Figure 1 (cartoon, rainbow over the protein chains, first blue to last red):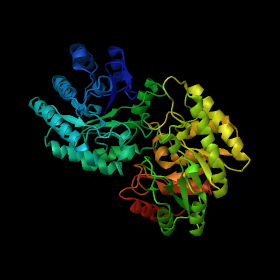
Figure 2: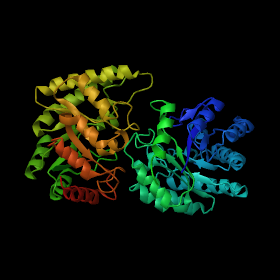
Figure 3: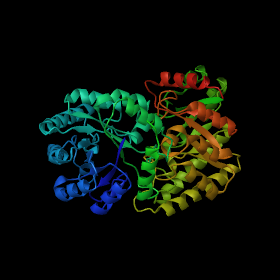
Figure 4: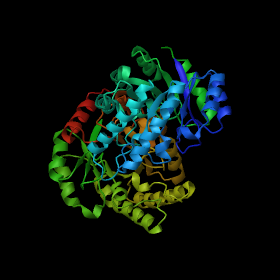
Length: 269
Length: 269
């Protein structure tokens, strides 16, 4: 079981970005806690020093399993489903700009809230058409670099587009690209999936990345989710990717990161 | 185990009002499904014909365990914590107007979203002071009629004020009235309570009413909550009130209401 944790390369409004701020100190802390990897939340690849990042992660033997992109939506309003074609175009370009970074780190590109939220006056069918088209454009370009994209079903309170695995797998079929799959997150699954283990099974080999947070979005062990059962299901589904911690930095970031790794390492799968 | 289900006396925007619309037909349907009671969501008691309502419920042997009041917030914007003192005053008057209705039906008055959401520029401490003051005014008046009020902890996405039992019990202590307690709802508890059964225990004899919906807000049995364990905990906590269904009317209202009662009646406590 390979464990990683989210680190935001910029200070962010997103509350569940576990670590954020000063690069060297945080990456080093993550490595010393025993993590195998660090998931990077990057608003815009142009704003970060990739050489410095690579040097830091390599020197600490940290893999980078995934790149989070949601801040481009949260802080700049970019989205695949905005009625403004210029915004949709910018969102597509932004994701395409992540491809060389993803290639460099062998990371999955996460499609979180950059898919957007149904805006007033936009029909669901229209938004889905824009979404499918944007994903096809991004996946085509990514395929040439052997990079994969994973869309995260997100709970109903945070988006009106793709809340659960059933809708996610329909989207996977509609996009029809082999490098497009899903990222499942236990916090969202707790609200949206009728049966968490069964949904993991349904996702099967289209499960490209996995986020853990407990039912209350604290670190695993702080809520009521059955992580033994969840990790066992991941194992029998032959998921070999990272289990990545994305949870609220509570009671403080160090305690949360430490409790997460201790809790998960003690589960037998 | 006494079972009820929510019926909205007005057509409402609130999605989890299971039944709404035509009074006689819906109340009769609820009785014939085998329910012991009907929880009434009433935006403004002045707008409904109480004699007709009482005649209908009595003739069908239906109790009215609780009155929902959230539509006064959802559709009129009334709230105990609005910065506008006139809105706060109207909210208090609205709840006080429910007291004679609650007395008539021996029902608990629910304080849901009428408590409000922290508005921009309002400090949390200020909102809590307004909330405590409003609840004390309402509870004092209700006490003379031996009517009880129950505040519902609601998940973080729907309000920023009182999300869980810990905060709710602190509020109960701060209000300091014997006729003020909590309403717990399994949908919200699934997100907010670290341990659902333990939170029921902590609430103890301040548990005045109980809502059921499964983890996905469908009828119990459609998600992954352990209702056997939850109902057993209610039983050992000596809760003798109603178990009231408040869930999305999916796949349709009749199926949901029927599946709920069949599922709950089959649980041994």
